[in-house]
Length: 60
Image 1: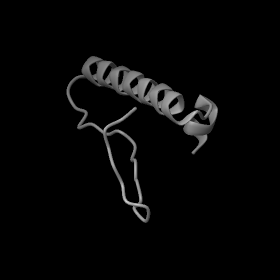
Image 2 (image 1 turned 90 degrees about the vertical axis):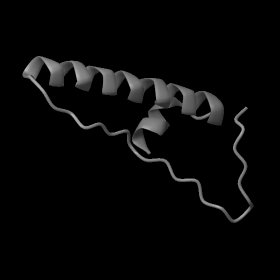
Image 3 (image 1 turned 180 degrees about the vertical axis):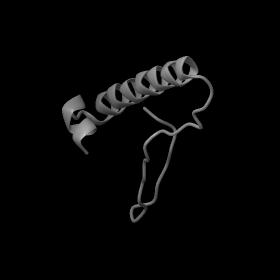
Image 4 (image 1 turned 45 degrees about the vertical axis):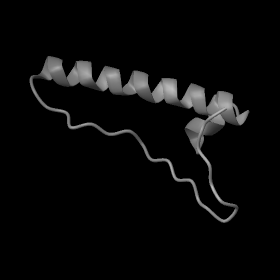
């Protein structure tokens, strides 16, 4: 369980990960792979903690 608290009328917002990507083509490819990995890990964690399937997290 997380350690965040919210009042009943609060809204919890999540946004897509972002990164300042730059450098050579190889650098950009590596950074893109790392960002994709982070996105997949986050989707699995969110699915695990919310009880929703990963497919729904990805779609939403």
